Length: 274
Length: 349
Image 1 (cartoon, rainbow over the protein chains, first blue to last red):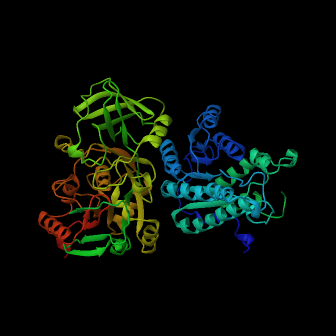
Image 2 (cartoon, rainbow over the protein chains, first blue to last red; image 1 turned 180 degrees about the horizontal axis):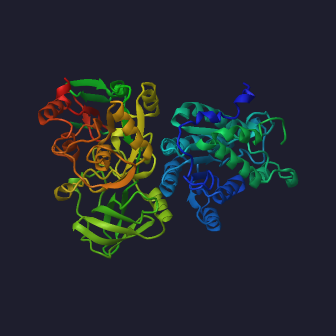
């Protein structure tokens, strides 16, 4: 089934809950905004943590390894490090409790943590079921559970006029049939479709859903997928983080008018580049 | 009434007893709650998520097992999580009825408690041998992480299976500040909120740190509810003004919403956006300035929740409603059935 290309990026106009915008200060749309990023200790997630902190957001990040969480929290003063595995059902509420507890609510959730499936990449018929299950647990069930647990916090933020955005990080592998990217691509396609339905269902609650492909970046995940890729041909995660932060800003209430132009600058899933 | 013993927030057979402004009593399915609202009404719920406020551990000096139930904190601020008031029980857990629980070892200022990964010091005893002020070690984030790892939702013997956080968070739960779930909100899901919107009914929230409902100790229970911090967002205050102006009713979901809104109200019934601490008790002599109707659980006479309902209804009607609840098999407690009570307005009938 083909996804109509004009539907791939969500409609920002859904967010019209009113209010006077984020943070309540003139120092930018992220000032004081409460943001949570999963997979925040490496690659795009870490770049997002730094980008959002630099824009004045209050940031909580989630990752599996306690030592890395501690190190990133130390290196980025003000960031709240939370140890948890979004693929594990029993970790979701403890993570949600800490996110909403430490930030006192939530305005923006970035479901960034991802699992590649089999490493090295494998044809679907060579993919072990356990590798596929892990990819879906991390890329679909994790975002589903965490978003559901935090939907109340997001909707409260929207009612209070701060705006609420969920950004699901997807991939062009969700839309194009790349051999050996089946587990990852199928799970990201599921996440993308879930974003679209959520967006429809919660538009009137003022919660905006973005499902965006950051492009091929020089990250540990990309190195695991394509070990011999030339890093100089890849996007820097810092650049992708800046674009995604702009897209989030565009989806916040007082920036709704600006949203369309931001939307254009984010890479559309098109053509094979991997 | 029978205690609801399964942790289902919206069981298909849930019942709703409706008392209208003319004191007429009707029975409905709780899933029809939204149909009892009118265009122009404003529904206000408590968006507090529930803390895992039960902490098992040991008393440092004696090694005796204790269960600490966090019961209050000075404010709703996220970093304000080092100091709590708490009720301490001796050995055992929720499976034993609170009134049958052994007392904790004698507690005094300076005592250390080891609660899983958390460490706390008893600052002082608060006028009752089982009620203390606790100060946790560590940073606020360390306290949050410790609660997340080790805490369990406070629960009572009538529910046999251990509760998980997902059992006690309402669909619209936001800031985790409640010590027990604001369970009237269990009745509502996202579909219900969408359906309110479709009927021209507004939905807003306050945040109120709902406290514990029972300690098993008569002396302590007489002190309930403890002081509870709350906040009323501007959007909610504005919506109340709009609802009053158009003649709509303000329908509170749960006793905590009544307590917060009535505490925040001026003498004339104006509610401003504010943060406060609800200290008052609401009962038969209270004059309600803001709230016109309440969706609540079913409550037994003598509880503070039942007393609050007496502010909405004369005793004769309330007694009649209670008899109906009993004779028609309504279930009680947090996973039980519900009542929707409109403040009596006999003049309009």
